[in-house]
Length: 153
Image (tube, rainbow, N blue to C red):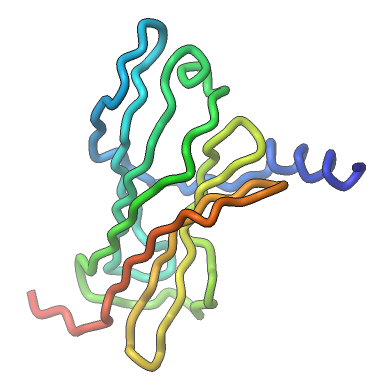
C-alpha cells in the first residue's frame, strides 16, 4: 500500500509532458450545458530523436464541469498517424519501446503514451499509442509505420 501511495504521488508531480505538442483542431461530440463539450482533439508532435517525422494523434477529451477543471478521466481510445515530413536523421541511438510522447488523461492515475520501435529488417519506424494506469492499463491501442526512405523533395 505504501508503494502505491508513493507511485500516485510521483505520477501527480513527475509525469513528463511533451513540450511542443500542437493542437491542429477539434470537433465537438457531445453538447454539455455546463463546461466545455466532449470533443475529439487532433494534435501533432515531432519525434524528438528522429528528425523528419511528425505524428498526428486524435483522442477523446471529456468535457463538462469536471473536464473543464481537469478532473475528468478521458477515454483510452486514440488513433495515430506518423509521416515522413523531411529527410530522416537520427539524433542519437534509438531504443525499442522508447517513449516519444506522454500525456495525462486523468488527474493522477491514467496516461496516454506513444512509443517507438525500429524494425531493422524492414527499415521501418513503428509507433504505438496506448493508455495505461498505475493499477490497470487498457489493451486499446493503435499503430502506424513509416518506411525509412530517401527524401527527394
